[in-house]
Image (tube, rainbow, N blue to C red; front, top):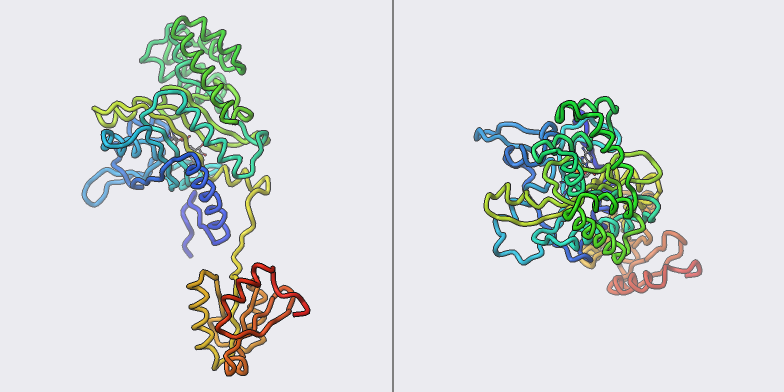
Amino acid sequence: MFESLPGFREFYPEECSRRNHLFRIFRNVARTFSFREFDAPVLEPLDLYVEKSGEEIVGQLFHFTDKGDRQVALRPELTPSLARMVAARANSLRRPIKWFNVGEHFRYERPQKGRLRAFYQFNADVMGEEDVAADAELIALLVAIFKACGLGANDFRVRLSDRVTWALFLSSLGVSDEQRPSLLDAIDKSERRKPEQTLESIEGAMPGRGEEILSGIEEMKTVSTFDALNERLVSFGEEGERRAGEWAELLQLLESHDAADCIGIDLSIVRGLAYYTGFVYEAFETSVESRALAGGGRYDHLVKKLSGNVDLPAAGFAIGDVTLTDCLDGKKLLPDYIDAPEIFIVAGENERPTALRDVALLRQAGYSSAYTLKRQAFGKQFKEAGRSGAKFAVVYGEQEVLENKVKIKDLSTGAEVSINSSDLLRNLRSLEESGGIAADG
Ligand code: HAM
């Protein structure tokens, strides 16, 4: 017996319907924010991810050499493909470019709670707008999606941080632009590591200064209010003051978007991906310790890096389906699976051809209609009809068909009415409106 691969899920109809429920919310809310859906290949040249996404993701790639001797990889994320697509048509696309996607991604991670090797992401990105209004629009969309899933403002938190703030802080300590990435990486990993390991990484990048820099970093990570942040930024000089103004504007916009109640300043977030350049954030469930529900931020240089000549500011985020499904499941916010047909056809052996013609008619009219594929006695067919969860059975007995009639039976009350078969659709519609057939017929 074959088994599916570790970290890959099988979606039986129940799981598929839960997944589709999430996808519907993603698409509906994205449209209300006037984002347009796009898609990209799942298999890409390996080089697209090397360097661009950062060491962590590259170590997790599913990659191989194809039959044409190309080095290829299953997409671990969408952002590099999006950047390439937008760069290729940068001159003809109307800006700002607001695009979203719902698609499957692959990372060779150790399968564990919240982490699999194949998972879906909802990605939303704004390209061509450097103003913080774009960052605010994205965070507002993220919050609106969680709220549309049924989560309240206290159920989740968007932890907001900023790579520019970190860059200013690190350069105030004499850290050069070249040394910065390894320190940001150490800060990113410090949440999941022992302090000695973080110290070791910092020492590696800044020999002899590990202790001092680590204590500065730890102090920065305690900042959780705008006032505390403002105080530090102002101390970094003119650039710091300008950044404080942008922080204030972003927070103000989030307030106007009615999204501020679930957002907190938290500089411990720096994000593992290499391309981020500005505001970054991750969303977490509040009541349980779990992996991030979503993550994103601004990445103003990626398009230029990939295209060589197109310079386009960009920002975006992705929500993962694994952690979000776990979170909604835990709070009983996923709807029960509804697979019942609306109508179940019950027919005698000789009446089947007539009944099947009506099945076709009902289906064309949009009714989900079922019948027993095997020819069965009436009793068995009624049993199946009951089990199916259908609201109505439409019954074709010998006498009915002779008289051009059918019987509609309300399976919840047992009551039935006999009607002219040509009136079937009209009768079903009015029964739906009235809620069914009363027990007295
Ligand atoms: P990311 O933080 O790597 O960002 O992934 C975003 C979300 O995808 C995570 O918060 C998590 O919910 C989900 N996710 C990631 N890896 C796994 C996994 N192995 N199993 C289950 N879920 C996972 C990005 O991918 C960026 N490209 C987002 C972005 C879009 N930035 C700008 N635009």
